[in-house]
Amino acid sequence: MEIHALRIVISEQWLCRLAVDAMPPDAGMRDVRVRLAAEGVYVYGSYQMLVGVPFEMLWELSVRAGKIAAKLADVKVARLGAGLLKSTLLGQLAGMAAKIEGLSLQEDTLLVDLDRLLASKGYPARTNLRLVRCTEGSLLIESQAPG
Image (cartoon, rainbow, N blue to C red; front, top):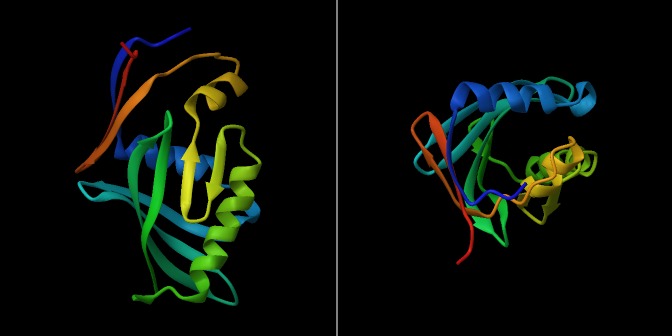
């Protein structure tokens, strides 16, 4: 299947449910929530160390080489700068991404290869991504065949 033109709007609630469902039980993250805003995707939750440490991450979205690129723009931990916990969170994310076909983490950017992800679920497709944009409460993804 090849997508020649597609415009899909994904709700904040659906994206939050997807994130929570994809989280392995041993990830050490609890109470994960997602909020979509014009500047990107906010992810909130707590990281379990000796106690739960609240965190907030801001991911800026774009399309890079036909993949959705989510670049970590900001991390706050317990309302302070992230420092050491940033590398811990990115390490956890890299471990989770390695277990899911079509996801990878390169430095501070999560790459989502929708074509590989869909193929791994039995839906071979060429999505021809051209745009991904956040607005308040929703995510817009557009595809258009080259030409």
